[in-house]
Structures are given as structure tokens and as C-alpha cells.
Length: 439
Image 1 (cartoon, rainbow, N blue to C red):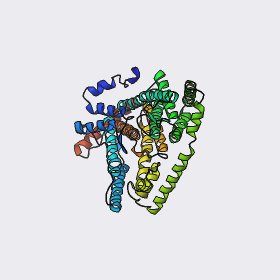
Image 2 (image 1 turned 90 degrees about the horizontal axis):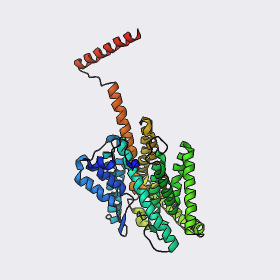
Image 3 (image 1 turned 120 degrees about the horizontal axis):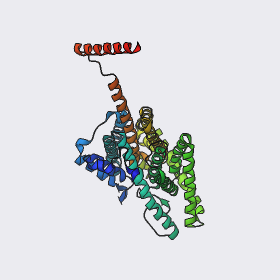
Image 4 (image 1 turned 45 degrees about the horizontal axis):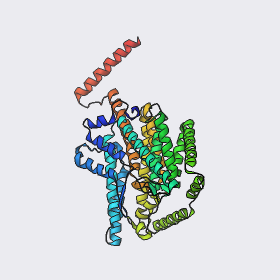
């Protein structure tokens, strides 16, 4: 239980229950991120969104707009979606339920998510606490789905947690999105283990490494596998031993799984990993998206236009922005994604030494999710927005700390005659004592 305590040795739940209701709701939101319920075609209910609404209804006075955490790109995205809806309504005569709920209201919920996380993450302990609960929730629920998935493979029984009985997807329904969730959790767990204050250590770190990497394998999401590459390369550069241990753990997990499910295991893995028809279909969609961009290069064809024309989504976030929202929307998305690399690097420079690995871990996770966005429409993945909000919170806390230290060392100069006289008197006294010390 020691690993679940924040570093001032106060239990996380006790701190939340002691009066900070918003922190308790934010923690519940993070814990529930791996879960979604499919109610009908094209409509999924996320319990975390229910918690988000509770936060807005019960504690609106605790929600804060922290200027350092926000960028102009946030507002640019709102503008892009507004003109995208206008173009769609202008050309089609109205907005479909998909555009209204999935896209427009979906963006509102993402911005509320960002507001919630940045509102409560005003010190390093809270940032670490939310990251810890996120990784723990993902690891525990993944272990359950992983066991059910292997039982299903051996027995042939139809059990929940898999996509068509062939790919692990948990309760996110989409194996690619689920793979991204696992990679982000793995990046945070492994990245923070590089420093003196890891989120998890010992057997818990090993457990996370084993279950998350095994789950990632059985999603059979080549996009998610590719998104793990920047995480592995980052670990390789920063700490070769950690990267080697991660790789060895994955190989051991594969060997154990192979022994458990029998001799047809390797053939099954090869079959799922070399699905050619799906790759060809993705390439055709990407080509169609580029053609749509050429036809409407500046503002795009309108929000949801590509899906209405093709009957499916692009499966590539930058190309989706190009097709639906044109070069302007693409600019806003690119600026949005890159701004968190900039904030993260600035936070790393300003952070205290013991917190630098936390910033590094979040940057590795952001790199993984950015890579994932090249193979799926990852913009609406709530866990990506969680990672972005935590990076922005690191930057805000680090900048606030530096500003406080600067204020303490050099208080602002008053323009009044009294303030100027007082400042000159202190400076003169200081110089006298310095000269006395020199002598």
C-alpha cells in the first residue's frame, strides 16, 4: 500500500475526502477512463463523462482557468469546429447526430476534461497522484481482460473484453484505442521509474510492465505497437537497463502465454499481425482524404463530410483535419499537439530535480499518442487529453515555483516616492554589511 501514497505521506483518498470534493471527482474520472459502454450504434457512454458532469454541477466554483495551462491553439480548435459545423450545415442543410454529439459535444467534454485536470493539479503531489491512479486503474482492469482473453482463446468461449473474439480491447471497444491507453500507462509507469521518486517500484512496477506489455501485444494493433517505439527509444537513450528489462519482460510474457495456450499460439500471432487487407483499406482511405483536401484546401469540406461521403472515418487524425477542416484546421491541430512538447520541455528545465522524470514520462506518453494519431483518429481519446493536461499542469506548477522564487529574491519596485526611498535604504544597508564582511 506504500506505493499508493503521495510523497507527503498523506493518503490520497484522505486528502480528497478532507474537503476537496473536486480532487475526489477528478480521481474518480481518471480511474474510470478505461471504461465505455456501447448503448447503440455509433453511441457510447463513458462513466467518466458522468463524473465530469458531476464536477460541473456540484463544484463549479472550484473549477479554475489557469492561463499558463492553456494555449491559443485550444481556442483555435474551437474556432475550427465552429466553422466546420457552419460549412456542413450550409452544404447539407443541417447537422447530423454524429456531428452534433460525437464531434461538437465531444469537443466540449474534452475541454471540460482539460479544465478539471488542470484545476486540481496545482502541485507536484497532485499531478503524481492522478498519474498513479491512472496507471493503477489501467493495469488492474487490463489484467482481468487479459485473463478472460486467454481463456477465450483456449476454450473458444465468447467472453467480454475482446473484439470479435480475436483482439484484446477491454471496455474501449476499439483495439487500437485500447492499445493507445496501454502504451500511455506503460510510458508513465516506466518513465517515472528512471528517477529517485518513481510512481511504482519493485513488484508493482514489474506487474505493470508485464500486464501492460502483454495487453499491448494481444490488441494486435500495429498502430499501437508503432506508438510504443518512441517510448522504447526514449527509455533506451535515457536508461538502457530499463529498456532492456522492459524488452525481456515482454519476451518472458510471450513465452508464458505460448506455453499456456498451446502450440498454435505462434501461428495465431503471425496471422493477426500480418493482416494485409486492412492495411490496403487504410491506404485507400488516406488517399481519398488527401483528394478531399485538394478539393477544399483552405477550410475543408465541413465537419463530418468525409465520413458522410465514405461511410467510414479516415483512421488518421492529421488527414481527418485536412479533409474536414482544411489547412486552417490542420494548423490548429498541429500547433495544439506541438505546444505540449514545448510546455513539457520548458517544464523539464524549470522542474525540481526529483520531478524531472515525471515530466519525461509524460512527454514520452505524449510522443506515443501523437504517433498513434497517425493510424487512428486519436483526437477524442480522453486519456490523451489527460496526458496533455498533466503536462500543462507540470509547466504551470514549475513556472509558478520559479516566479515565487524570483519574487522572494527581488521584490517588485514601487514607483511611489515612499517605496523608492525604502528600496534605496535596504540597498544601502545591504551594501554596508557586504563591505563590512569584505573587510
